[in-house]
Length: 367
Ligand SMILES: *Cc1c(COP(=O)(O)O)cnc(C)c1O
Image (cartoon, rainbow, N blue to C red; front, side):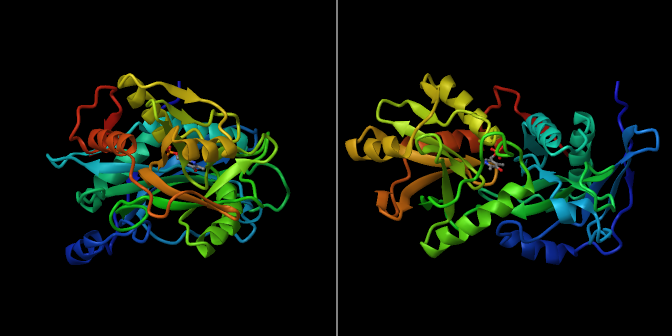
């Protein structure tokens, strides 16, 4: 039914030189640098109350002019996505399960009263952007072009209601390892004062507001020498939920994987669902269920829980060495990079980078 939008293209007059780009790609870090272009699609509700997307375009990367009363600046009506494009050995560029991101963006849109974007327009915006900026896709170990689609309420209006003007955009950033440098187990801080999400809230929407609320606990984590925060559900026996921007898994001694069930508070991670599939392919049992902080502590003490890892597009799979709490630690500083965690990481990254066969049809070519 929905017709596909044609993208127009206005190329940058001042793209970075090949030398500047090479200097950036030599040490990209995470989220520091952006490519020369951006994809944009606008949404507007007309006088009859009918909404529609139009003006699909590629334009030079640069500041956005927004009215100071734009709804996003006051009420945080914003959602986003995150995915990676990898360069394969033959120079082609691929991304991982983008339809899942498009569907999730629309689920987030419904929760934040933003318009849904046709899946084909979402995918085409990625293709268009990566096609013009394909020289920006790094191909070093663990490196990728991080794609950040987002949607903001641009309407100039201070009343509280869903905005009638919205902008969807995609920006792209060459990235290395999320936690910097070589992959090694990370220390996580247990947030006991703050929760991330509440029943009926926005926990399973990928929205900026959730991240704003995670920054104070994140600062607490950093003050304790930790890179990420773990959130619990204090109204549900201190069930483990997830980290500020990553899902969590536990590996048991018998090979069973356990991850918190999707109970409305937890982000439906594409990495999470892919790991569940890969583990089942290996004949491992996977349980999506409630796991409390006490079960984690007791399981590590008894030897039943042998590994814990964080997962998400940015971090892929990153082993958790130690969970620090105000009453002591679970695990040990430095910890060990668990065998199961690292093996699944290798397989997943192998599929994404084209080194391992993609038997589930998870890859989509972008350029
Ligand atoms: C994006 C995100 C994740 C990971 O999702 P992926 O699709 O695997 O990248 C997990 N938790 C939160 C809160 C997130 O925002």
